[in-house]
Length: 226
Ligand code: ADP
Ligand code: MG
Image (cartoon, rainbow, N blue to C red):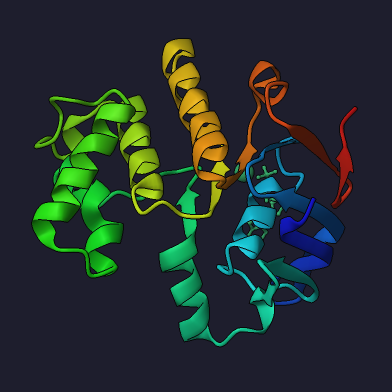
């Protein structure tokens, strides 16, 4: 099967002054369209770093990230930004919602940035809020929502522009079992019906087991989990 995403010998080191912390030490990973991939591993093993590097938010020391045949690490910053706006949905471990925009406006944001007309953008955002179980919360501001509700707004925002690649960093971290299940179903539905690819970092082994493939971060590399 052809890979939508191909990560090859990826190295990344955090550098602060004289201190350097090597985190990714030769990561190899392939993800096909239409697949849900789970990444598990101990806290501090580098899972978030890996997602950030794939997302072009951090530049690797060496190695390559091929997305649909394009070498992302070699793109100019404006082209990387275009990749992120068009093709990528990112669910942060700690969601970054804009506190003075309503839930609905937060979800519509990627569409507004993508020049979709405002009424259309709001209609599509409304449908996604419903999918994550937040019908009726459209006008709420993020500070008026619970942690789990804010997380679901962030997930809706990451999916609303139908990205081909979704990177989700512990998306169900502060959700109860019912809402975790809802999010997992949404991801599975997206990969099956739209051929998107999802990489989901999770602590929840029961959730990970339902992915098409599971990788474990160990000592700066990922191993296929049997
Ligand atoms: P995980 O998501 O698996 O918990 P992270 O990717 O967040 O792990 O972190 C991997 C390692 O990199 C940890 O040792 C962490 O302390 C370190 N690290 C993360 N962010 C930074 C940073 N901004 N500066 C320096 N070190 C960092
Ligand atoms: Mg993390």
